[in-house]
Each structure stands twice: as structure tokens, then as C-alpha cells.
Image (tube, rainbow, N blue to C red; front, side, top):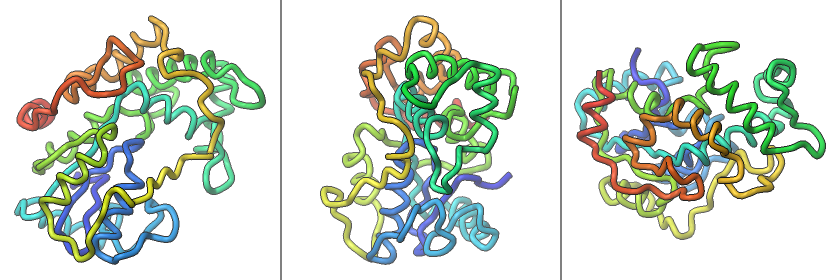
Length: 267
């Protein structure tokens, strides 16, 4: 199994378990800059050198060695489940991807046919999102009409694979408190090039892919939608201390207990 979704600086100072839709583009660029004193020219997800990734066969033994010896700082980042699933919808379902095509080819036609999701023209964002939410629940609960996608599968699932295979986190922080959390990481590692988080741009690679969100977050979630979100992300809300009762509150209600995360996700 190894450590899928894991990135490491070439200097081997820090390891990051990627959680999609949780500032991963910005984090990857900061890691790249820490070693090279410049940002990667393009989407960091496309980088094939300058950053070790588990998807690269030549990086795997290096990442595995650091994880097993636990002599590199290990971290990840999470996000409010309400805003994360909304972001996935606008980026991956409504948007045109950087290759100029719809995400996963026939996914949108499938959603239109089976769930009545509309994403063209002046469509009803709230109605289409709630229909997409049914689809996301079906993929996660019953793995049909397809396997769940990494962009809307639970954060705890991504976080857990690293623990289950013998890894341990030193820090997990909130996207909503990005500078504070990322600074904590930087304070615990040595970088070849100094990083001032106040001047680092935010690399939101999904921005501009799709239509702008036309309503406040809470407007997209009625009682049924909230029930579906809780069904999908119950463990995320509990472990990462997010507010299920109020979709308008994107901020966490408390700090993450790393011992609890390791105990509950390590099985």
C-alpha cells in the first residue's frame, strides 16, 4: 500500500499528506520554494521533478525511509466539509479543467442523465448542487454509479492511509487558519530559502474553472442536504472539530487532538 498522496521536499526535511481541496496547491508550492527559492511554473500537481511524490517510483523508497525513521516533519491540512464539498462541485462538476475539457470526460453527462444535474447557462446552483450531493453520497456509501472521487471522499480517509501504513503526523492544521498552521510547520523545519507567508500568493488552481458561487454557503444546505453531508463526513466533523449544526460557520470549534486522530484512524 505504501504512502499514496504523499509529497516530500527534495531536501527530505518535510513530508505532506495531500488532502484534495484543502490548500494543496499552495502547500506544494511552498514546499517547492523552500528547496529551490522559486515557485514551480505551472500547477504543482503537474510537477514531475523538484518535489518527491509517492506517484513517482523513484521517490517511493526515499519517502518510505523518512516515514519509517520519522526523522522528517510530517503534516497535513483539513477544511470545513461544507465548503470543501461545495468547492468540489464548482471546480470539478461545473468547471472546465486545465486541459480544456470537463472533469473525467463523461461524468457530467452521467450526472445530468441519472441525477438531473445542470451546469450550463444560467442554471439553478442550489438545486444542481443538492442533486450532486446525492450522487456524492451514492459513490461513497455504495460505490455506484462509480467509485468515490478523491476530491469529495472524506478527509479522514485520506489522512488515515498514512497512519494505517505506519506513519505518524506531527501536525494537522486548518485551511481556515492557514498562515498560523503553515507557520507552525515552518518553525519546525530548516529551509534552504526563507519563506514569508504574508507575501506568498495563494495558488488556487481551481479558481476560474467554473461559475462563481452565487449564494452564501448556508443557502446550499437544507435539512436533507445537511443530513447527507453528515452521513458522508460524520468522522470529519468529529475528528477535526468542525461545526455540523451551522453551515454558515466555516471555522473549527476547537483544536485537533493528534492522539485521538492516530487512535481512531490507525485501525
